[in-house]
Amino acid sequence: MVSSKAFARCVLVLLSLWLCIQSVPISVDKTKEKHDAEQLEPPQSAETGLHYDRYLREVIEYLEKDPHFKEKLKNANMDDIKEGKLSRELYFVHHNFRTKLDELKREEMNRLRMLIKAKHDIQGDNGRTVNHQALLKQFEHLNHMNPDTFEVDDLDRLIKSATKDLENFDKGRHDEFKRYEMMKEHEKRERLNSLTEEDRKKEEQHYEEMRRKHADHPKVNHPGSEDQLKEVWQEGDGLDPQDFEPKTFFKLHDSNGDGFLDETELEALFTKELEKVYNSENEEDDMVQMEEERLRMREHVMNEVDTDNDRLVSLSEFMVATKKDDFHEKEEWETLDQNPLYTEEELREYEQQLTNEKNDINKRSVVLQKQREDLERKQEELNAQKVGLQQAVEEMDRIKAQRTNTEVKREGEAAPVVPGNNQPLPPVHQQQDVPVSGHS
Image (tube, rainbow, N blue to C red; front, side):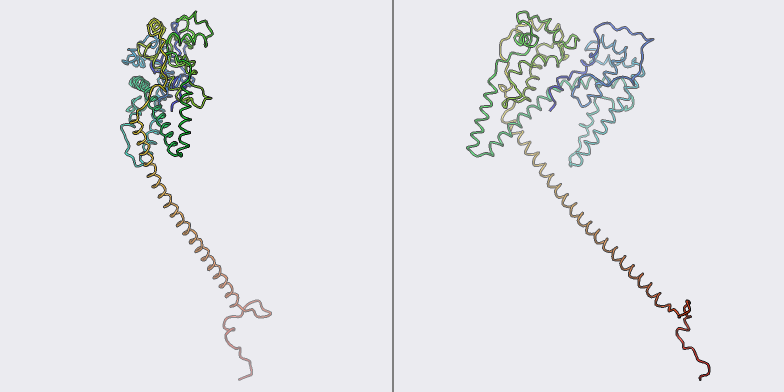
């Protein structure tokens, strides 16, 4: 599950483009400017959580190094960015930065090729049909038909893909949390079913006690309400709630001074409220739930205040919101335990899915076990053949050595030596008697 701290730094690429841009007019001396793309620092902007996060952040930060593009960006509005007008300014970016963007794209293409090959191999090994259309979606943030150079179409695709993906990112987190909660309930029921009746009753009482303890907490103020902000003003900022002033509050919590409250800065405002409900030292409190609660609070404020849907709260939007009737709302915020996340039917479907996955794993395990047994049997056969071959070699060596010894022995017996003469007699002398003179 994506951590909340990581997600809290996620910002829409259109908003990320404004990072590091100063509010003062830009004055560039063309004679003194240096364009050394190789000396640029690694990307320092916030992580987005997207699978192409590093590529996205590097492209943004290298573009921001170009004075012309930065100037156009400062004067561009959201419609210009969404309609691709800003992308066309890439034509005027200094060639050193264009060269660096080309390198970034080639690196990204190589990464995606390796990723798709790995997925293809894994799915193929598991006997599953490879979904080529789903794999090709990995390339939607760039033009893969041109793998070598970063062009206007690449920037346009990157902006549109990041916009769409980040807008759907919250939904993905909610779905993941929902599965997490259903898994918890499933494991709880499995545990209860494994106990004796007496132990099960004790465990059920324990669960109920934990539920009551978690629900027993101070009032949680509505996120973004006057009471909630005044509490931050008093306990976080150390100021008198009677002196609460919205504009001053906004500037105090616009930590980077860019004139907006982004998602990170907004979520930081809810810490006091969350601490009323969650404590990491309490058994009854789940910190995963706390991060989901933080996300819900941030989404609520964005829906109420962010009128232009740019995922940023400007000072003007904030001031307008403080003048609405909802700002003075006294109603308590309903926490997660007061809002069912799933139905019994959804839980049964999820449990059936788990059962199917377990069966698939068991089937695969049987196949792997059989393959392992076959490999072990073949290994034993190879070992036996190896031993037999070694024995045959040793027997041949023994026979060869024995034959050599026999031949040497025979050669030694076939050459008798006459005393006083080191030379052996000719063969004829060895086979015939020598006649003695004077005898018939």
